[in-house]
Structure formats: C-alpha cells, structure tokens
Figure 1 (cartoon, helix red, strand yellow):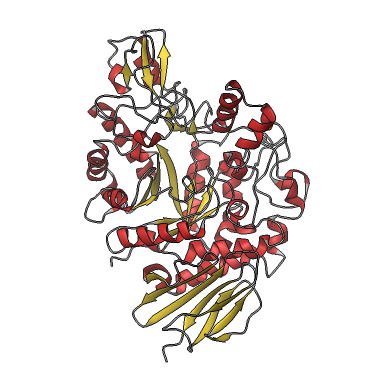
Figure 2 (figure 1 turned 90 degrees about the vertical axis):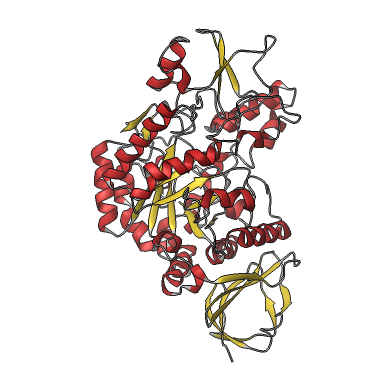
Length: 546
C-alpha cells in the first residue's frame, strides 16, 4: 500500500467563529486560532482544517461565499491568515482550507450579473429554468427548504439552489465557471496551504433535465449526477496534482462502490472522503449497523482508496451526546468513542472540544438557535400545523448548533471564549467541562487523545494494518484486529452502560497481550480468555505472537 503523510495524519477541525475571540466582538477569529496553536500542537495532531472564512453575508455561517479572494472581517485580515499559515507551518502543522464550489452567495458579483438579465454573459454561470404550469420546474427539495427552486422576478425564471435560497448553485457544465474556480484554487495553494476540504463536492454534476421524483423528501437525487467525476478529474489534472496536498471531499449519499469512484488511487480525483452513512443516515447509535457499515467500506476501499473516520463535526451533534453517554459515563464514553475513531481504518478527525468531551446542548427557545437549517425546519413544521413546542423538541437533537457552541476554555465568564457577548450561547456546563480543567487532570480525555495520537505516530499498524471485526453480531462489545506484518493489535470496546463478560474468540483465546491504552485502571499485561468489561471500557492490546 502506498504510504503518504495524509494517510498518517490526524486532523483537528476548527470552527473558528466558535473557537477563540481576541477582539471582544463575540465571534472567534483567525488571531484566536493563532493564539491557540500551541494548545493544538500539544494535543499532537498533524493538520488543522478551518471552516470557511471568505467574505460572506453569513446566511449559512460562511458557506455562502461572496468573494473567494478576501477574508471575512469577522475572521480577520489576509495578513492574519498569512501569519496563521506561517506559524502553523513553523510548528509542523498542515493547514487545510474549506472550499465551497458547488454554490456561491446570492450576493456574489457573479450571481448579481447572472440575475441581471437573460442575455448577461454570466447568465449561464448558474442554473436557470422556466417554471412549469405556474410552479417551480420540478418538485425537488433542497437541504434547507421545501423547494430547490427560487423565482426571480427580474427575469421571470427560477434559479436552482441545493441549500438555502441565498446559495445558488454554480453551473459546472460551463467551462468558464470551472476555469474561474481553478484559478481561485491556485491562488490559495500558491500561498502555501496544504489542501482542501471540498464542501458538497458530490453535487457538482447536474442532470440535463430536472424531472419530478416520486419521493422528493429523500434528496439523494441532488448528488452523484452525471459529470461530477469528469469535473473532478479535470480539477485534479489542472490544479490538484501539481501540489503536495491533501484533499477530502464531502460526499453525500454514497456507498462504497460509488465512493471508490471519488477516491480510487487509479482515478485521479480526490485523496479521501467523508461519507455519511453514519452521521446523516444513522440518527442514534445502532451498533450492528455501524459494524456493517465499517466492514462494507473497508472491503470496498482497502488497498484501492482511503476513508475518513469521524462521529461529529460542525454539522452533527457532539459524539458523546449523540452516540455515547454524556451523563454518568461521559469521560469513559468519550474515551471509548475516541478509541473507536482512531483505531478504525482511515484518517481520524477531531472536532474542536471533542478532546475535552464537550456535549450537545438544548436551547429553550427557537430564537436561541442560529442554524439556518434548524430555523427553516422549525418554521416548516409550524406552518404545517405542528405545535411550536413539539416542533422545537423535534429539531433540538440534531440541530447543527449542538456542535457550534463556543469552545470551553475555562470556568470564567463565557467559558473564556470572549470578553463580549458570544454570537451563540455557551453550553451551561462549561464550569465543569473546559480545557483548563482537562489540562490539570492527568487522567482527562485530553491526555487520552494525546496518547492515542502518539500511538498512531509510533505504530504503523494503526494506520496501515488490515482490519477484521471478530464479533459483528454482538450489540455491545466491539472486538476487532489491526494487523501489519508480524504485529497484531486487538481492540476491545464495551459500548454500553453495563458490565459485560466477554469471551475472547479464537485464535486469540489463551494468548497474552500488552495493554497499550485503556480508559480504566488495568494491569499492563492480560491473559486473553474471559474478560469482564466495565461500562464503556476501551482497551488497545498488542497480542504476543507466542
């Protein structure tokens, strides 16, 4: 298997507006990232991924870009970014930028020209269609609204938007659009960035005809349409292959067969991907389903392409709340989930605050939610007759704001995030869960992550080892191996609130193992036979060959 730095890397995601505020305006900023680089380096990660900070009206927190070449004033200045890049590189940290090229803001100059008249030279830079019988061109939904079409009175046509009304989709079939995007990508790469996380990249292709679908609620029709792979191969040929970088695509609605088209090492498209069979398609913890997903993706990609491992990010509720136990066993559960993500095949991602076990939040009023998807869904439910209290209860668990509350640095006002009024409320539990507390506790979740990352750096088996699930039908205990040459690791995870007695399966029963990492006090060596696993116990074991 080809060995590369980005396969071996651990990536730390920074949602900068919630990370650290240095000027008291209530928003995190790039200078805040600069000030916390030493903290990130102490954790041990190799790269940081920054969410979008381009000029934007902020309808969707920066994912609606109005100028690809400038920095949003909330975030800082180009000089701030250049200093961040220099200082990160000085610490040995790679910098990955988030890039949104499926759509722009409706305030982008390209769109303002496109909508100005039907014969404007940039009219075809976006997707315009006539209505049908006084209605939108098709019954397609977008991610955030009941229709993917918005009527524009200026020219009497509808434009297409896969997300919010404020985010019109670019027409990638137009070569002028593609060349403009490639030019912009080179601008940032020439500054020295180390790669891109490509937002909604599976949605670049569009059908020639937008036909009505039988079930518009299942929006898989938005992705993986004809043309997407040709566009990505062209992007690779003209831009990506000329730089030593990492690319990771946000690829919705794919299974391994389709996913391999994006990341196959013989395909010359992207290096790796985020698929969403877990976070988007598995609302709550489903162990047997999760095991099956891991096996299918391993079988589909191993030796041919590369996967990513994550259980939360800026779009998904924090993992210890959604998939673990954020109450009595919060610490043990957070460590178990960390072990899971970092020992499965693929590049592991850490979302800011995950390393201290930050939890999801439930606000009491819809007004406290900032997320456009949450607000729009609440509005749609209420307009369709649902009681407002019930509508709020329905949107709370999976609201993207669950993961967007400010980073909890200490137990001072606003968790040490800002001296001003935070743009979104701080989780009330910040007095008990914060970085200061974690750094002062040698048994904290933070140091557990640090140890996991060090293991990855020291042992290639954690990156390149073959994977086998030894008990795919057990609903509580995960037992799987990673093997590389003569090295075999056994990972044991008791993912539940109860103690479990577990019989180690053949061929490992009767052998001895060294305990490399565990989230409970344990002996350094274990006899592998019948083990009693405590609630949310996690162990990484190096099996002795004899």
